[in-house]
Length: 600
Ligand code: CKU
Image (cartoon, rainbow, N blue to C red; front, side, top):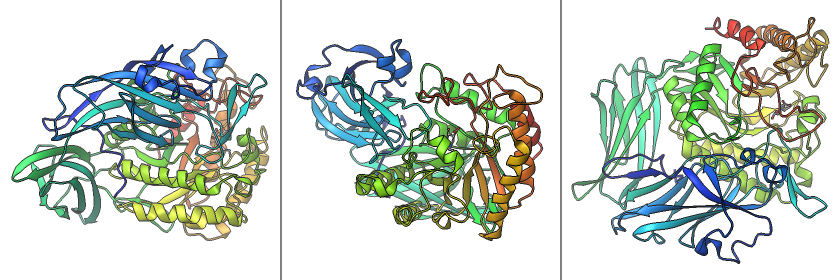
């Protein structure tokens, strides 16, 4: 522990957490003059209203605003009833994309780089009793030294345009919930739980970090409200005989209650849910609670009409219902950590998550899906203007995602990158310390992986040795031999034979395979883009998967159609969804469902 994203907000008699979501003020700042003009102190001079949480892009009706790149500002107000010396005051953003600085009453309280993890501002020294002005300066320009990677270019009129080396729209803004929090001065800062099973008995190694206080305790409460185990002290081991285990799609959650006392008086109380389960890789198997599990599901995006990447409970709920209907048990948070609410829901629903950091685009190419899909990727690291800064930001994302998500039973693995260059010495040198870092930081020592594109071939890839299981993104029958499924299948099997010949003794999971499919197009026999072709392509893949025992999972690309940048390869977005962007099934959804419901 040591890196704090502040625990997910809870409300009780000792902690106050108040949602600041709603309509905020908003202003673009293309000339970056807001600070010189003292906007944090004086307010935004020509603001419009803007919903939070949401991406700003798709609420606009003009292209310039939708595609804006540069500085932009948000502002709201929050009320502090009294400023007490026994309390500390925080503003916690689920994320601000991609960099930000936070001001309260004109005083800078925090800055953050990385658009998909919490930004926590300790505003204690800046707040006053009554109303307080909260101002956020954000920037969404892409570069090769921050993740996700890309570039920012100028149009002939001088305005900026962000171009991602990745295949999703550069949605930006305050896309997740914002909380105002009052915490006791003497507070619980963090905790971690590590599970060991012996038969049906569970041992739980716990650690609690607190700011001050002299006594700390932890209790596991079962679903009937009975104390299943209790421990005193900052660390120790709890024992639960005949524990209820957290299982796939059958999630048993205990309530965890952590209390901090000072001079015999309880000063802080933190409550959370916990699921008892173990994850481990053994030979070619992925084991959950010591039992083999086969991963079925998708790579997803946080993406929907109007709100872009904004978190919305109704959409998340619908997604989980669709995932259940189709027989899935897993998804990858391609290509960035999602809003925390996704993980809380997965904990409750018993879904497995491969949690990915936003390290995507480590490949210098605007249409990178094409070059990567065909295995024609260009190098990245040799020409990266500042590998040091890039790796510092990448490290921070790994530290913060593990700090944030380490206690979710749903998180079964960390994905350190998506489709990076892996076939050079530079790449090997770049990734080795990042894998080591993740291994050292995770108290539960979950398996590590990364998603490999076509150039990361069995012969060339120098990073798969760092991975506990191997994730492959492959497009035989789309980017390779599109429309030629028989030929595609031969090439696909050839590659799998080459992987098999390496005798890595590790599981393989397909983290991408799919075809762009228009929900309006039917054609017999199937052609690329038709509903029939998506079905035929899936069936071909299922046959290949069945032929290689090391394949322990299939996460199709993508759960739903999603927005991308514009280009000749994208028809208003990527259409590889098995569901439409409105979360209705395409024909292939029924093909997949028939299979997944029958895989135990
Ligand atoms: C997907 C090997 C191609 C990489 N993959 C990345 C993902 O972000 C894209 O959306 C390809 C695609 O549909 O092209």
